Image 1 (cartoon, rainbow over the protein chains, first blue to last red):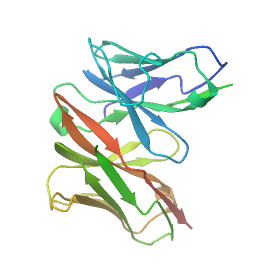
Image 2 (cartoon, chains in turn orange, red; image 1 turned 90 degrees about the vertical axis):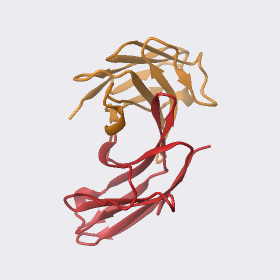
Image 3 (spheres, helix red, strand yellow; image 1 turned 30 degrees about the horizontal axis):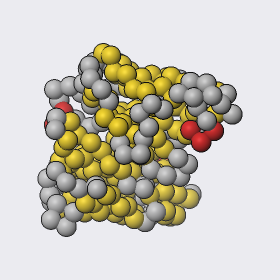
Image 4 (cartoon, helix red, strand yellow; image 1 turned 30 degrees about the vertical axis):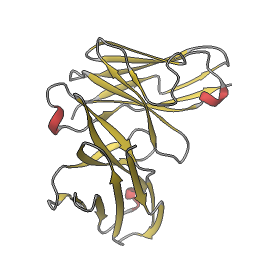
Length: 118
Length: 113
């Protein structure tokens, strides 16, 4: 099946620094990628939808300047958590759908990134 | 606002038992309902349902959708300890040219030997 690679799988950073998380579709092109956040024992909350070549669409309550999304190619989207604070500590997961096969394909998920801000 | 509610939130059974997980939804511009299994990391895909009344099966797992009642169930027969996981239901809504997934809270299934 299709593979979505997310990197890094785990990161610990100091408060005030920025962290970049990459999401790559390895064997297919993805016009649209999605970024989710998951708190312990809770479900996935959509943060933003990343569209190749255009600005991301953010969900209500998600700060655009805090969570910068770049989708520069059909196989790569990045999420940068800027000026991270301990409350940003969470599990971040990306997903992608195949371009062109949209109507009959599921979303493939990356392995997730566990961010800990100390 | 799109809404997905799963029940029960947690379930503890013994190996060999059969379980039924529920998912109800309210969504504008419904396209599909998906079930995922999440163990330690990212969710893995189980089923995608788009039509009412057509059961999808994969081994001991099966699922069906009722678009009139806005409801889906996921059945697992002869459960095994390896079935222990969080099961997520997600509903896809069409937003212009792409699908947006809204997830339920998940059902934590624990299967004891």
